[in-house]
Length: 250
Image (cartoon, rainbow, N blue to C red; front, side, top):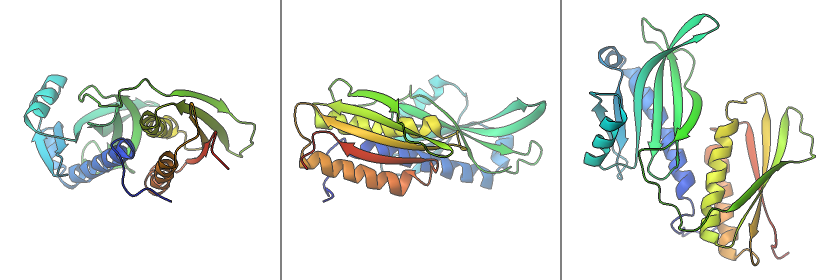
């Protein structure tokens, strides 16, 4: 049975992650719909407040100090900042719009880029994921317990064009465990997102140290599983997750 009432840390992390991805996509569409803005200045902040209203701010300086000052004056749950950059790929100069997104509930920021024609600013191909980086703009509130124990091991299962990896994660405190399971999912999908030619099957083996998992923990993990399948699988098509419990009463 799926739990209908979620406590503080139940789905907060993954919902924030999905919201941030959506904000980066929306920002890209906004930028591409008005490329004349990029001609004038490449640096903007698109700030989402707690009512999910997005405010556009022109950056007079592309630096951390400007970002921090802006966030102090404008209430926010997340933001994306933009820039234009170039990179050299096999002797070819490529121009792209860079997006760096951060959320107040996620410890890592997401970096995406959109290739564009240097002269016309027309998009080339689609928005691409680049990497994650530390979120230095928000103070993240996590459960006040030490992190869950977590270890990874590749299984003996053979997957054509892929790998099967099991994570053993456990904690005595279920609130901290739920938080860390979500964080593990977010970190894992982003670590393998660029390995598009490989499929990854991840097994999350969950231990409630000191006893059996409660009905509440079971229902929360079920909700996380459903959310991951519905919202994250389309964003990360080369991953699947299976959740299992140690010490679960059969």
